[in-house]
Length: 286
Image (cartoon, rainbow, N blue to C red; front, side, top):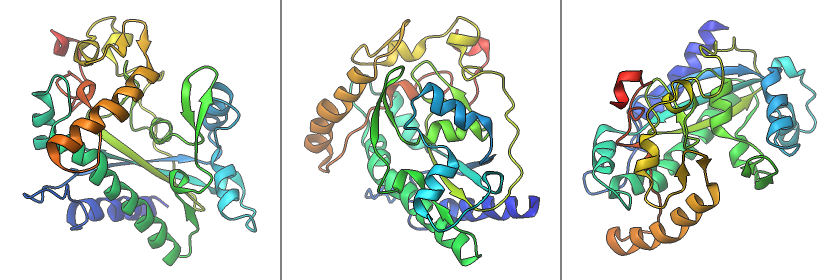
């Protein structure tokens, strides 16, 4: 099935690298995303049960969302694979956002709205492509049953987390702002599907969910704290409520009045920081 893993990766990369759908819909017709990363995790990986225990009982394990989508099928949990991908922001988008101190750049806001449209199209394309090959698959975040939830431990949460699927699939660890730090940095978006196929899981090359974050692993950095325009990041952690309120109120008004489309975003903690485009090393924060 290693060849099949390469085929799946090729389908994802071809869509992002060659499809005209990968666009910010600006006058320059810029690409929304650069060459993606792809990883795999098994449906029976115990980490998904751990998510249910730590995040909340509402958080799906792969078998739950697959059974929700295909109630007549009765797959063995080990026959399911979570296919996860990372979509890196372009250099132009990151460069623009580095310069901002309060609101997102236009490219960043477009990536949040139109780039996410690309991500959704990729999810649907991959599901359809797999089904043509005789493999049933579902995109959890696009399921009618997907919804935001309140986690006793982590406040704002949901029934499926793209970042946690990516972590399980060996693609990165969490930063101080809760963004995922990957080999292509933290200025990214994630996506995933659950498929009825066995694909060898990607090895997780880290120990612990904060392994790539200098703030946690070395007790240094904290540049993302300085970048947050509303104080939602402190040495104590990430205030999700304050962050969310800013993004969906203040930046929404700003994007509409300055860029002329309905959108929102921020991403300041993902740009102008050592982990923007790579896994940082200790010297990067100096």
